[in-house]
Length: 205
Image (cartoon, rainbow, N blue to C red):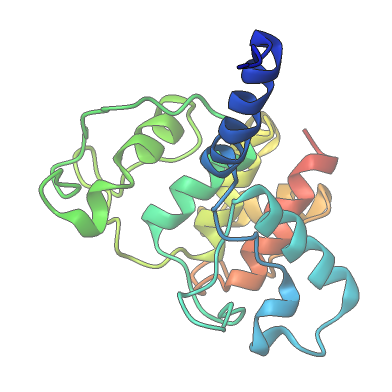
């Protein structure tokens, strides 16, 4: 005599078979977020600086150089800085944006990725081109340019005095706001400068 199997038992068995596949399908396979401990060139640095780096890494605002180095003493391009300011000031980054600068070509993969960030920062009045139609995306950022972006980003442009050289007024306001980038605005900014300046924004805006 055959016994009837309850439909509820059958449903339970089916569910048990499906659950593992559902879990596997939803499992997060993205690589873990890196911390300062993952970069060999950051070993032994000041704990306060490491904390700032960790905060930026956790938010995806900065990355290493593709190896086990963060390149803390290296420089950052204007394209990279546009991405950074767009993120730290929480700008609306348009998808499919068209470049307003002739030297940021959508066909050049080395700079095309930055178009939405550049346009967002430009629209917000945080970053300008080197001329009306050129941006120089691959040029390194100077401390004067960095101070300008930060001061404009946290809404203190009106406090900037007209000075010679032009960047001194921005350096002065940045320093009064707690971001000391030195006095030579023509000097290339290091990634350490960008870390300190970017992480300080949250205490200002």
